[in-house]
Amino acid sequence: MLFLSFAVMTVISCTNNTKDAVDNRIALRTDTTNIVKLTDTLVIFESTCRGCAYERSTNFAISDSMNMIKLADIVTTDNSPADMDGGSISKDLILVPVKTGTTNIKVYKFWKQEKTAADSTRFTAYKIEVKQ
Image (cartoon, rainbow, N blue to C red):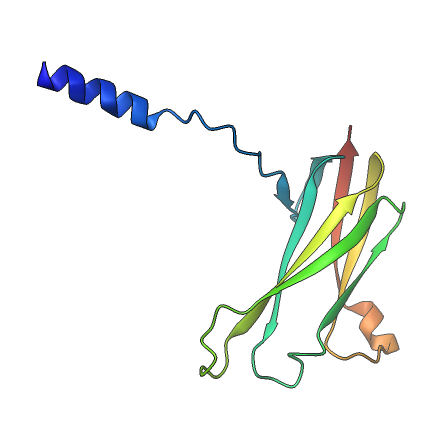
């Protein structure tokens, strides 16, 4: 009887009866076509050096061949203690699709506020197919 009670409690505790919101964040990859839904939030994980000359000036831009993806936000997270030198600061680029179809985007990472012609040659490319 004790075993049966334990087994029933285990099954009940392992069942997830909560109706939590589904996390619809999709981490984009460069090595494949990213197939996403119009309701998904797209994320590109970047970083910058902590305590270096570029820490505060690192910024990003996207170029979208079909104007289907918009850069909505850049979330900056520093998980290092304040008294620590070096390391990196997380920069999560939050993108949202605005219409369906297939597009190619380029993500540019700039280390300075002033952009030069050389900056336009440094980018990461992503292919994205947005479905309903």
